[in-house]
Image 1 (cartoon, rainbow, N blue to C red):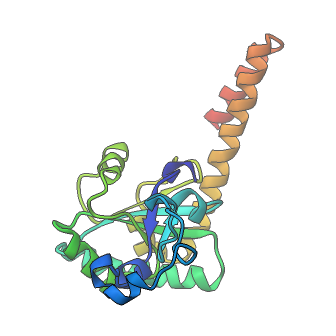
Image 2: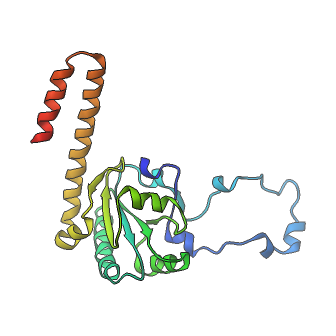
Length: 216
């Protein structure tokens, strides 16, 4: 998924793990390492970290629910269990769907507590990641809870995910799939039209056909 290309997302496993620092290693362990035992230097971004995944890999070929939420928010506390039920059902059906939690919590500790206790095993963007604010602006999010369903390219399938989950339950996912397929078909048609127009062959006819399709 291009929206989270080269962005790290995190699962509950990441927040559950205990990070061992060099200070916690014993002097004996350090002295017993020979030159052959020592691991080569690895950049932090290249290290394998349990529970850390690249967004565009984890979300590939999936419909994604961007879930803007916060632990201090009563409506969020009411809606999150409904989203959990939907997620469980879609997981059982092996549906191509994933949720990314984007926190409005005041601190990282509050975000992690809310994520670990109330959420499912979906993905989360760290509370202090500035990309979260970019997404808030991109999708014009001014209040929580907000569930925005986006396509593989990051285009909005529906900005009313919360209401649709409340009203339709798992049936909402089928509607999202159909809307995403329609959106992708229109984008593909637009791309084909631009290619035809650039060649200078039948451009007007292609544009007329596209306009008619969009009007129906």
